[in-house]
Every structure is written in structure tokens, then in C-alpha cells.
Amino acid sequence: MSLDAEPRTLRFGTREVSALWTKPSGTTTHGCFVYAPGAGSGLNDPFGAYLAERLAADGTSCLRFQFPYAESGQRRPDPPAVLEATWRAAIDASTKDGSVPVCGGRSMGGRYASMVASKGAALSGLALFAYPLHPPASPDQRRDAHLPRITVPTLFCSGTRDTFATPDELTEAAELVPGSTVHLLDGADHGFQTLKGSGRSREDVWREAVDALIAWWATLPQPL
Image 1 (cartoon, rainbow, N blue to C red):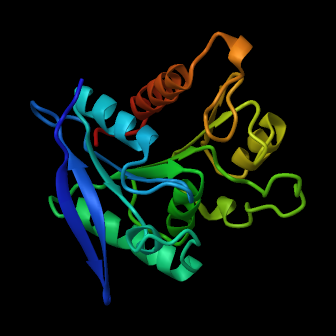
Image 2: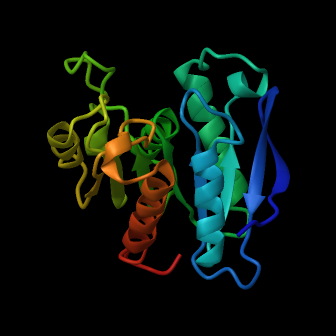
Image 3: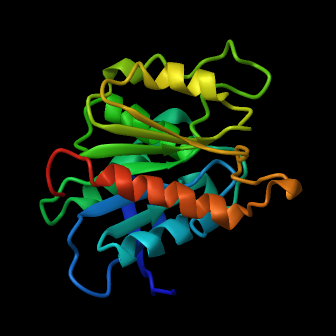
């Protein structure tokens, strides 16, 4: 399966970043998913590309984008205000037809989707893959103070070996969001890698993660 993605440009203030729009070959029936990658990835994040193609096969459009620091080839993430402004620009770009998207991302991309959701951005749902609840080995530095302010259905999907949140920690954090769902990826780490002896590849984990997203999407209160 390989679908062409249409290049887009998101502009906000004096900044602009690249984006990719993937749409189903037939009729779009399930709305749009807006996706941002983790801190170490950019527009060609392989999980994001896989997710976009799987969603397109299911009748869902996908808008993927990168943050300004990745656009300029830098490694250090932008300040929080810039990351949030980029997310708002992506949401605005996805709502030009009047639809309300489901938003999310992997690690930092999902974290900042949750930040704008907690501040009232118009979303139909939130999907957080490998949510970075705290830095590795620093469980006291929690990134969950904003979670109780999220009012949309939320999916948390992380590996059982993720050092940014143990299964118990992730479940505890998810309980702060009313109506949230947790899906644990057995044997996967923060990068969705598995141990050699597990019998599962990274692509197997990707498949399970997107299957979980599609199944959760079907439970949302109204057609999107």
C-alpha cells in the first residue's frame, strides 16, 4: 500500500512549516486525523507515514506536520509557545471544510496536542502514542497537570517497556482524563521497538497501535 501525500505549508505569524496531506482514494467517511511526530523525528516520521496510509485505507484523511525546529534542521525543540502555535495552525488548516478533527501524535507531538486540547482547541478526540509522562528515571517530573482539563475522548497507547511511563503510571495519568482509554502494546519500548526474542517486529507494534486507533475511533460519540 502506497498513497501519494500532497505537500502543504502551514503558516502562522512569521513562521511556516511543511506538512503532508494524505486522503483516501475513495470517499472520505471518517473525517481527518492531525498528527505530529516525536522530538527526534520530522515530517517523514515512519510511524506517521504508516499511520496515514492505514487511515486512508479506512476512509480517513490525515494531515502530518513538523515543528519549526525540525523545519530548520535543528535538534533542540522549540519553546512550548511555538510548539502549541504550530499545533493550532495545523488544526486550523484541517478545519477549512467545517469538520472537527481528531488530533494526536507520538511522544512530544502528542504531548503538545494534549496541551492545546486542555486549552480549548476544537477537537473531536485525542490520540496519544507513547505519551512522555516523565523523563526516563525521573518519575517525579510528571507532565500531567493539564490532563484533567481535557474534555474530549482520549486514547493513550504506549508500550509496556516505555521508560517515559510504566503501564501503572500511564493508567494513573489516563484516569485524570474523563472517558479516556488505555491500550498497552506488549513488549514495546518508547520507540515502539521490541526485544529480539519477543517474536514481534516494530511493524507489528505499528499495526497494533493503528488497529487500536481505528477501533477507538469507532467508539466516538458521533460520525466525524
